[in-house]
Amino acid sequence: MNFWAKLLTLVIKGIIKLICKFEGDSLSSVPQKGPLLLVINHINFLDAPLIYTLLHPRRVRGITKKENWDNWFVRILGNAWEAISIDRENPSKSTFKEIRKSFRDNRILCIAPEGTRSGTGILREGHPGVAYIALQSQVPLVLIAHYGTEKFWDNIKRFRRTKITIAVSQPFLLVNESKVNREIQREMTEQIMARLATMLPENYRGVYKNLDVISAQYVQQYQVPAEIPE
Image 1 (cartoon, one colour):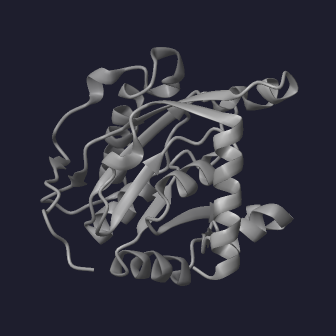
Image 2 (cartoon, one colour; image 1 turned 90 degrees about the vertical axis):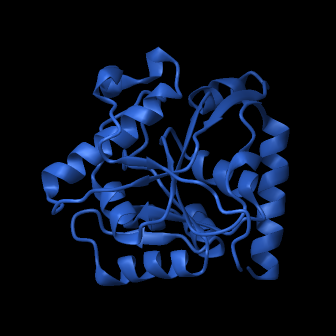
């Protein structure tokens, strides 16, 4: 990260601490070393700055749809934070090349499977790309569920800080002994999203209200090594 990117990160981190207050889990429980696939729910524009600045100095890259780069501010942040642009209709080889490079560099890759902002915090259906990345990379996944940012604009108008509640899962791996097809990827994605739903109040669970679907069929707990070489 160059000087201007570091400065931008520190400025945004300061602004976020000024306008938001945090409750729940500390992101310090996120593994401090090694490659990681971080899965979050997608509420609004605050998601990426929150995750990036709260995990700093951990090296994080996010996957964002190419249309976001049309916004000048998102483009500045995307360039500074080395975000990976993706064409959701036709993902390119270069996108997956950057994903693989991120894991080789022991970085965190952040993805929001819903693919678009909910605006309300209520979970939408997850896209199976997250399962594909997890299977191809075989890196551990950590889920981060948060809520409260949906009230940001109302709070700003009233000069109030926004209370944000955060929950962090234990790391786990996706595993499968048979040939993986689209149906299995869909089932794996459902397992990821249902687990994310358990970390949210019931009124935020949306299409994942039925937690009975959760099983251990594709999920294996991951033990974080005591030491991981840089």
